[in-house]
Length: 112
Image (cartoon, rainbow, N blue to C red; front, top):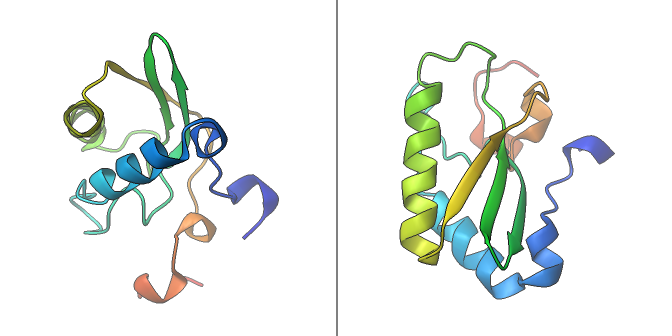
């Protein structure tokens, strides 16, 4: 995994217990086309927790992902349910690639 694809959230340092709780909750949010969770795929790039709420920086698999709006809404609702906090999602412009997948053995499309 390259340095830019490293899955480190700001909240891992500031609120590790909350980070783990959120990670587990977001494992239930699946990409409908690929069938893997947004955590497995590395779509959640960063999480920042402040007094005002939670900011999740997330990317999609493609710029014009047809499921993008639904995936973002589902992620927001799940995060708010898990954390009982206001959650905002910032859509990142980073390009998703297979190196972001958490466990390469889970990704069996033979693309690598």
